[in-house]
Length: 225
Ligand SMILES: C[S@@+](CC[C@H](N)C(=O)[O-])C[C@H]1O[C@@H](n2cnc3c(N)ncnc32)[C@H](O)[C@@H]1O
Image (cartoon, rainbow, N blue to C red; front, side):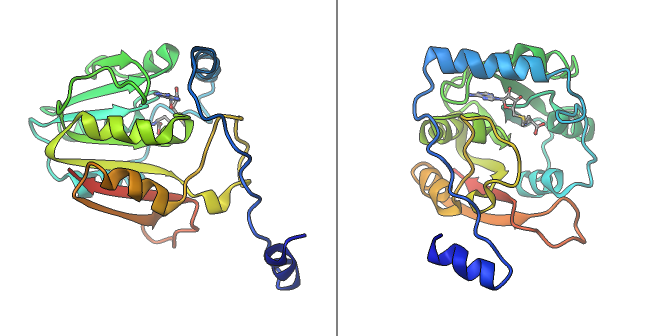
């Protein structure tokens, strides 16, 4: 037992188990495996919901960081069923919001008014500097080639554009069941990747509800290109 865990045992706390090294390359075989897994999971509305309560802080942080979205172009990268895009579209119907996901079956749930494309975070199928705002909620953890994916999120963002990544904290690894390719993040690691292309980067812990203290599971990284 490590000194950290022994200390934790004695004082009633145990450190999170270390993440096993996930695969480092998103080759064609792994991409297909991930696509198939999410295509199958698309029927599971309980774990992959198509709607979200707009009061949840994950939504609020997007709204706050982006500001008014009227007439702006927005990318939901790894959008799943488009639950976030749906809220943004309802609030800002003139925004040009796109959804992108590896799973065509997930995309079938995205409302028709929101255009979609299939693709991967590591090769986002949009030109450079197309979007005013880009966000990825709980999708980067599946991207496998994380630094490349963060670079792609920044590439499709206009200079002056705003970016939000919401994902899980590596310090809480083990709290949930995870597939072999999933990775949770060290706060500084993602900040470092973002800082390569963005001029303002910071991160913060978030909880679901405004009046509940964050438990440390979720982090939001906010950047300005
Ligand atoms: C946990 S779900 C989150 C979906 C959505 N962002 C949300 O918060 O409701 C993860 C999503 O990431 C997608 N995904 C996984 N790997 C991806 C990749 N390499 N590129 C794009 N999307 C990916 C999955 O198909 C799935 O829809």
